[in-house]
Amino acid sequence: MNKTVPAIWTRPPRQPALQDGCVHVWRADLDGHTAGELLSPAERERAGRILDERRRRRFIAARQILRSLLGGYLGRNPRSLELVIGAHGKPALAGQLHFNIAHSSELALFAFSRDCALGVDVERGERVRDVMGVARRLLGDGAERLLELEPDARRRELLRAWARAESIVKCDGRGLGVRAEDVADGMTVIELEVETGAAAALALAAPGARVQCWQWPPSGA
Image (cartoon, rainbow, N blue to C red; front, side, top):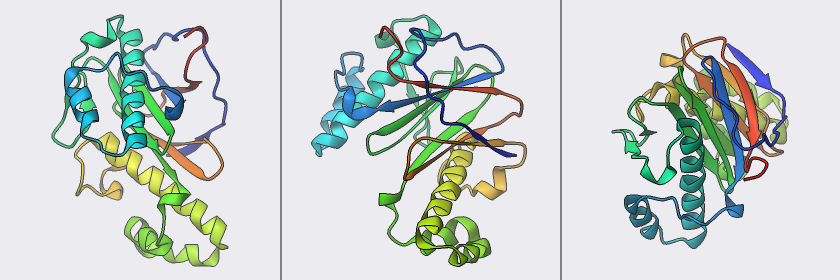
């Protein structure tokens, strides 16, 4: 099932309570947050291996925000959280909370649920060079319908399809080699409006969840 969440990204007071049956998605600008005092030694080491300064700052900012949000939801010191990286690169917290992150350039999304597996993805147009090549990989024979569209519309539709497919694969959690069309049954896919020139999607393993969209940082943070 597909649907769209309107672009209403508000700043909540501090951190809102995450109830069962609810999903929170946060949007953040990674170029505005680079402190990094919450990172673990392993994360600091990983950041040090990133040679490009801008990519390194964005990695630090993403982990800083993630730890801050997780600490708030769990009522724990963000520094004490032990994030486990799965076999396919998906971070987890030993079953305490479902969460997923995605970023493209400085735009980042963080999704959380207490009772529903999920995946989130964001794609921006500057990443796409061979539009039809990517479309054929994602859509198979259905890619040819994009040829009927004007170039800008073709790129927008490709980004939407790309974000939906990636969110489904990330929700499934088995990583590379899994095709979205093979695992999408039973999932709800929600397209998130983020900004012009970008597409984002949230895949949920169960229907009926209430999605709330928040802007980082929250008020008073």
